[in-house]
Image 1 (spheres, rainbow, N blue to C red):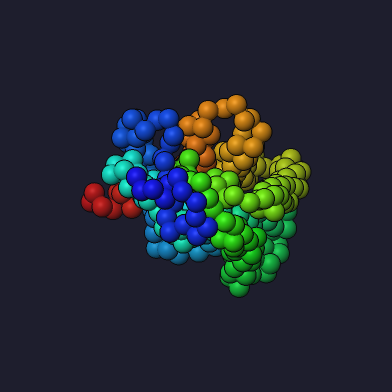
Image 2: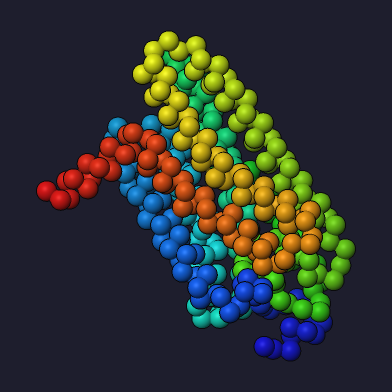
Length: 315
C-alpha cells in the first residue's frame, strides 16, 4: 500500500475501498451470493424490459413506469456491484477520486429517482382505480415522459451538491474508505474539515425525499383502499388488490433497507463496521433482485407473456 494512505494530502488521486472491514478473509465467499444476486437482477430487469417492449398490449402507463423502475435498478446495481466484485475477487481496491465522486452521484441520484418512480406508480394506480374514466386522458405518453424526466431531474438536482461539496473538502491522514463503495457519508468523513454542511444536507435529502414521497404514496393508497372497499364485484376487487399488492411489496423491498441503512449508520454507533457495511450492501442488492420477481409473479399480464415466451421457445 502506498505512503499516501497515511500522509497528508488535499487532493487525493485515489481512494482505497476496504470492501467489508473485518471480513477480508471471507470476501471470496461473500462474493458468491453477491454475484448470484447481481446476475439475477440483470436477468430479471432485462427480461421485464424485453417483455414490455415486445408485447404491444403492455404499452400502457403502468408498464412504462415499470420499465423506468427496471432501468433505475440496473443503473443502481451496475454503479456499485462490478467494482465491489473486483475488490472481492482481485483485491482491486483503488478507485480514482473522480471515479469515486461519479459513483457517489449515480448511486444516490438514482436512489432518489427510484423513490420518485414509486410515487409516480402510486399516482398511476390512484388514477386507474379512483378516476378510471380520466385515466387515458390524464396519463398520456407525453405526461408519462414528463413524469419520468421530472424524477430524473429531481434526483440530479438534489444529489449534485453531494460530489460538489465532497470535492471541495481538504483530505488528510488517510484515503482508506471503510466501505465497499463510495457512499457519501463514508467519503466525507475522511475530510480534515468541518463537514457539517455535507452531513446536514445529506440528512435533509433523506428526510425530504423519503418523507415527502412516502406521504404522497400513503395518501394515494388510502384513497385506493377506500375505492377498493366500495367495489361490489369480487373478481374486480381481487384483480385490483393483486395489482396494488405487487406495488406495495416493491415499496417495502425498497424503503425498508433504505431507511434501515440510513438510520442504523447514524444512530447505532456501537454496531460493528462490517454489519453497517453489509446492511448498506443489502440496500443496494435487494430491490433490483426482488422487484422483477414481484412483478413477474404478481402481475398476470407479465406472467402470462413470460409463460408464452418459454412455451414458444420449446415448440
